[in-house]
Image (cartoon, rainbow, N blue to C red; front, side, top):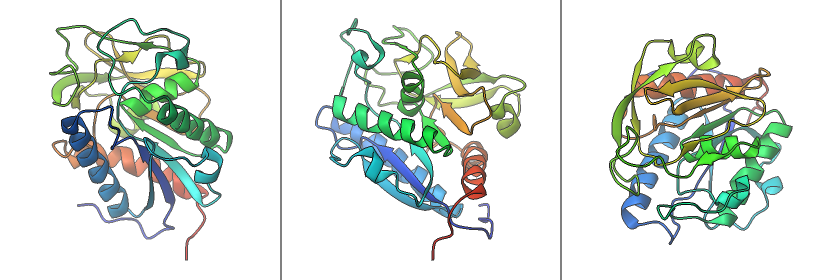
Length: 253
């Protein structure tokens, strides 16, 4: 395992919806395992982690994103309320929709962007990033698909993604085709303003996004934080995120 650099310990806010009664216990267990794995590795790489359970939190985003926070991570979870991207539900496969959790995490992303904090989103996190930027989602990719094995996305599948040359993601991961773990039945539809695609799957689905203006924002549609994924895939992403967090991070203690 890589040794954390002997630099400041950036305080990272991690948010996810892990305990929603609107999501099956199997999915909640999978999401919890992914979140715990992500936070364990963030700590191993030198971060101090503060976690927000978005499905139950009543706190305003302004209070959660305190001046001590150096970066934001938005993890996976249930489907986003389509009305947040000006659509009505057009599929019966939507699951776990929780408008309050959507609004909280969207507000956190928006506040982090205003403060120019690094933002890293995974799966639902990528989708929320796109919605915050005025983009839309494909509410259901249909079947069969490269991207999921079950209708509730509880089981991960492996597929290949192509990282696009010239992107921040290419600087982090290289441009070789990558095998990734996915579990999603939705995807980016119209790309949000100020975002560009930095990876795609073989079927054209956008697998990663980043800012066009140089701000440190990255979202991936797959699950590098899944316990079954390799740290060789996860650590470059976390190290790049934490390096950006450390640039202006307050030193704790």
